[in-house]
Amino acid sequence: MKIFDSAKKEKVEFISQEDKKVKIYVCGPTVYDDAHLGHARSAIVFDLLHRVLKANGYDVTMVKNFTDVDDKIIAKMEQSGKSLEEITTYYINSYLNDMKSLNILPNTIEPKATQSLDAMQNLVQKLLDEDKAYILDDGIYLDTSKDNNYGNISHRISDENSQARVETNQSKKDSKDFALWKFNTNQISFKTPFGEGRPGWHCECSAMIDKHLSDKSLPFAVDIHGGGADLLFPHHENEASQTRLAYGQEIAKYWMHNGFVNINGEKMSKSLGNSFFLKDALKQYDGEVIRFYMLNTHYRSDLSFNTQDLETSKKRLDKLYRVKKVVYGVKKGLVNKEFKKDILEALNDDLNTSKAISILDEYISKVNEQLTKEPKNKLLKQEIVATIAFVSDVLGVGLKDPYEYFQFGISDDDLEKINFLIEQRTQAKKEKNFELSDKIRDQLASMGISIMDSANGTLWEKI
Image 1 (spheres, rainbow, N blue to C red):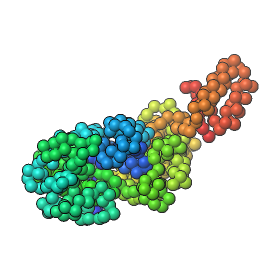
Image 2 (image 1 turned 45 degrees about the vertical axis):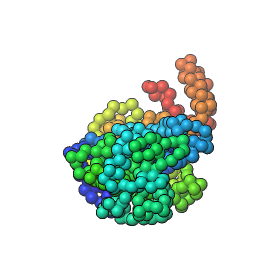
Image 3 (image 1 turned 180 degrees about the vertical axis):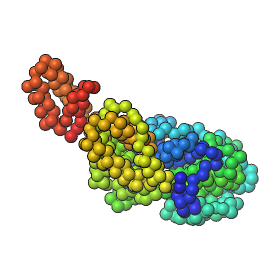
Image 4 (image 1 turned 90 degrees about the vertical axis):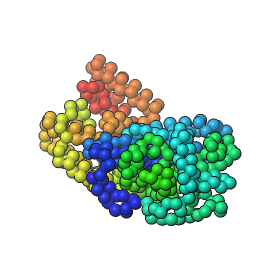
């Protein structure tokens, strides 16, 4: 398997530190608002990595954190009058529900910053004791001059445009130095031997990785560290530096970063007013449709989000579900070996989803032709069921009941009406009142509802 290492800036062979075991850490959201499309993309990208590694026989430990103490959360508290716990619990649950809609596999560990304060305190104290950090009036800063390898991850030393969270204290020894701990007197602070305050953003991940994942007998704390491209500098560079200085260990063997989401040709940003919340997209489209759409663009490329391409992608996913309808109720057989080999070969090449999905398109087209010629071919149908199940495992799409998939977008009132009419029609058929039965079928058709009688009862979908 090959992946693109952001630090080396090239595609490299992936070799885990321990045989068939992989530790992955992905930077999670700051939980002060609803998840947006950028969160969705990062989650889908690293969930795909998780699935592909599993398909290759790896035991995967996947960790994604929640930043639940931050300036933005404090601002939300002041704005809403709610407590930190009320705000963060609400948005964590909202995020997890959204991720479930996208078929994101559960993470092995989901640490919260506020539950890892002991690890952060130990990190800061260790750096102070070893004279690798220093104290100013507003906080404790890492002395980056003590790290000869600073800049090796991002190959950048500074970039004013990318340092929205970087401190501006003019008393710092060097402009690169960053806050490990912020002294403050506001309502959110924690007591420590070196002063009351709260952790700096960069401090969190290093401490949580050391607490939950690090094995000091290995040269790297984790195999893969991931996140959005905007985190490469300064966040990941600073993480790497403080871990190196505190523990004498590199934080990650490989670095992976996903591209941005652009809306109307501009990078998605709340300051631009184009931050498309995921919950809004989920009202209009099934979560699998959004996932499948995002998978069509290679993870390292920027994704230009637009509804026209989303609709085109939905039609491609619809074809998979129409095949799944044809084999509805058939038992699982054996996966098509050639298809499985080709898909994994594509995905093992730095998650080449474009190629993988084109292979899926070809397979669907091929089996449709075969089903037309051999509609009663039982072995073929069993193979299709198994192959779609494999697609679901590795790509995270095609998991739904095909009839439920085509029912997306029906309002509760319409759903109640449809079920009532179907019950009436079922009763009419029992009473051999075929005139009424046909009339109800026509009424449902006028509502855009297609029905099919089966051994499992009447099945329906939105046309």
